[in-house]
Image (cartoon, rainbow, N blue to C red; front, side, top):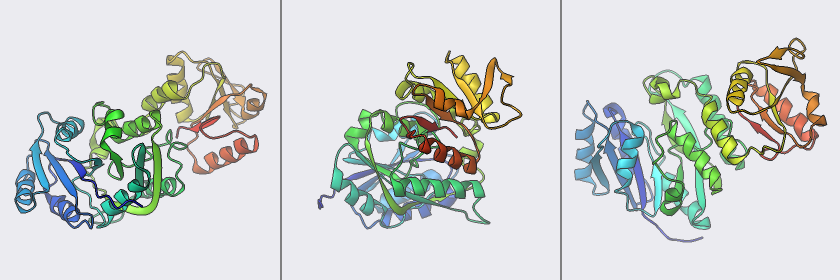
Length: 338
């Protein structure tokens, strides 16, 4: 294993997080890996955030403070990134915390592979009061399982497979995928698809490398861009760009709300598709001009591409098992979109 200790640039947008910022920066300063710089960019804060940032910059020269020229998250990240001098890039959220060995673990693992590789770890949610919500716990469990099994691209159409704060990548690779440039939200999910597009290798680590704070006013709860967290528009855009083969018949599996919403998007894209389910009450019905069919029709189609939009975890498991028994393969033959 290489003993190289490349400089890590930690890019952190900061806006009105004064109550949490000291804990965050303290966790960075406490890192066992010492060769880092924190690019902390103030996004037009209205509380005591800038003063806290400046106080840390005076105490530790590795903390470098900047002020964004445009408001909002992506412009702020983009502004700060131009000042990064590190060979390796990491991102941090200003209300979260790092375990003390986060950077050491990420860098040591990256050194084994080098350029062309992203190292991604596990995450754990926490709250200041009460308990973490069940939805976040399920997402956390799923994320950590993805990292443990290294199945990021197999699962990429379900949800964001790499948390925005829990990866490390070489600057050349980050620039290749266009870094923070596309002003598309959710920015971390769009970045995952660009990793997938350029087929960078993702190495998952079965270790918690980030503590993710849940709070009522986090932007994933309050911004309009995150309101519909299925992100079907983004997923479908990349599916057509990266995985759709027009010579193969398309199958949409799921007759609930997800299925109906996806069917409208497919029709708007001018795509023809078979629509299947197992609901006896819906089979044979005409929905949006498409006849609902039993899923057995899949065995009669010539090399179909199957989009699964069933929401139920149990239902998805059953569908996977059935498709696997038909020798259908994830990413090649079927994709989970929900």
